[in-house]
Length: 582
Image (tube, rainbow, N blue to C red; front, top):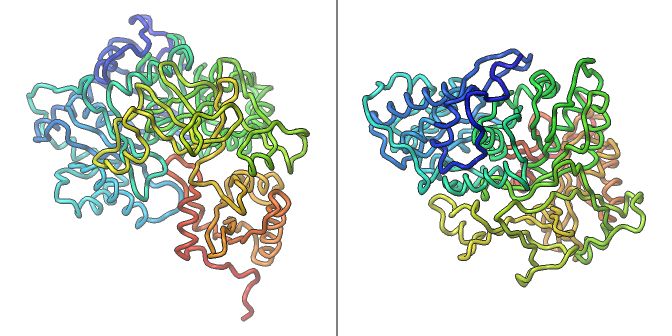
């Protein structure tokens, strides 16, 4: 049985009708629900009722106020999935301070890369304290010593040693900022998104109500999503809290090791809402497809959301087929689209609409930027299937615009713009970056490309990732997915981008070399042949040692921009195709 109930019998259900985070936690604390932390084996590590969360936050708030931190100052937190994050994040809310959640080390990258990231985030946020899990206390101390403004740093023990001062709390209110969110692709030149209390409340209202997830008192959530990413923090902390729901957590690391544990918790606790990027569904299918417990029951799951990366219909099809015997209903898939600059949610697919797709002619898309329906949807070389990501959430507007700024009709590809009460007021202390994407009348340039279709949005990719060769628009996903579909490499083991060689753009594909040295020539030839067949363009193939890995964003998405930067910096050295003779 779950630690906390799903139904809150002591408290009337309210759905995201609050004015601030402290106000919604104060209300949830009167009920019976809470959060439970599990390990990779499905064992309970710790459990906190919302009442416990508030009580612990009050203690931290009094300590921080007593230590002399002034209202509005920033506290950087390494946002692992642990009770300490809740203590500091909500403690800041009651102390009038702004938490700055940042990632823990993701994948292979080494100490120096993580320290560089921490230093950039401290500088960008102007943090005066930096707190994290004990295992990262040394990293934090080393990064913080370059910043005289950092007055407190270390693990939770440095908070514990502060006296519990007899001071009044000073909770953040509706007109205050709430926290600073670093967008997932901004680790190199970090842009701290100012999340304002009113904007967050507007997004929670839009996301949890009709047109979104329509959360009720009977809902329970399960999440492995990182709390330093907007989909984890807003979607699977703030949204359930705003509706007084219980949450069951796995860490991202434990999910990566045992993805079936995510589904086991949904089954065991009769959860109703869980989200993942496409790669999470793919991982669960590949790792768990051959070892599905006979008692796995996913029939309680009513919203299986997808977001955070390009929604892949093929991945979702395989997941649905694999887990159909366990009661999974493919109609509960909810493709969605969002970003940190809008707190989180921009669009949602319809309830019980499942995955709806549009198969278009990729040649016409490349040459004319028009999504013409494919004559033969089965022609894999010519047809491309996109997922419809739903309609814009209530009280917001979405437009697709051409280069001249005019709104484009259905099936014409352009840049996606959004306006509404959830839009950020700007990047923290970065007016120049704000002006680049946010107009005076509140329209946000998302940086994404896509097209509309009878009110739905179809996202075709990031504008900065688009490859243009001889006037043709080539989507890097087309190249990568073609290589994966031929089983030349595993999912997300390759990245496509372009470089200017002085005579025009050249396509480059970086591939993890998970083969023996005497098979690397074959790997290069197979990749180049697949690209030539798919897009009729020659490419350069560079092999990346698996020990180095392909760079990812903090949310786990492939970073083509950083892959390209690594290539240009000479980090991807040629790998000998055969052992050197002694």
